[in-house]
Length: 205
Ligand code: IMP
Picture 1: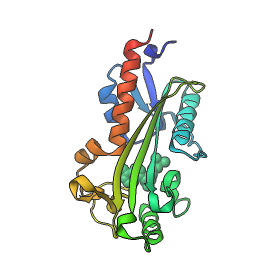
Picture 2 (picture 1 turned 135 degrees about the vertical axis):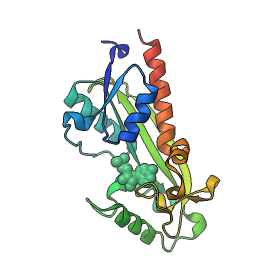
Picture 3 (picture 1 turned 45 degrees about the horizontal axis):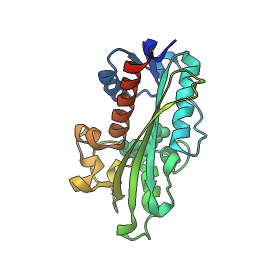
Picture 4 (picture 1 turned 30 degrees about the horizontal axis):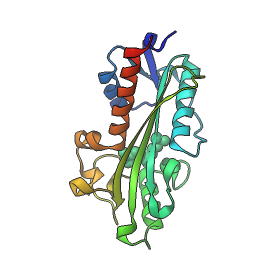
């Protein structure tokens, strides 16, 4: 099978927004959420975003016996040596809520001067043709900002209420979903991944 034969791709995420965005670009393939196949959750044992994205994609590709896309994302804070990083979703402990994670982050930064609270959201997206694919397509998006002293805004999720977006002079949680998608780490990674994939589907022999 060549890469161009891939008619269906499993997405190792249940996020309907992500599925819609990828589907809109890859028109000749059908993107299916892994929840449709009851794929068991993969254990994210990597120390980097790229390792975890590959683990998730490989898990979905192996279980469904089809090509897979996965992403891994999080927030990296300079003053904390890169933490929360790959454990962003469970920074305050396994099963912690968004507000508990955010509270821990603000607590860890309470003695750090404002100008040293530089941070970035990272998103890595990968495409595997099959579970043993030795040459994954890898895309990454970075969104630079700064951690605010207190949460503001109602939109988004996770660390959005404490992520200051310099170009817009507000928190990420104060941006509309459309604006956020157009400038975010996830938006950038998705654009890069789909461009790389489109190119491969066009040129594969
Ligand atoms: P993942 O599902 O393993 O990729 O974990 C991502 C975690 O990183 C989320 O649970 C959030 O805590 C954080 N995160 C990633 N992207 C964003 C974002 O766009 N806004 C806010 N938090 C984010």
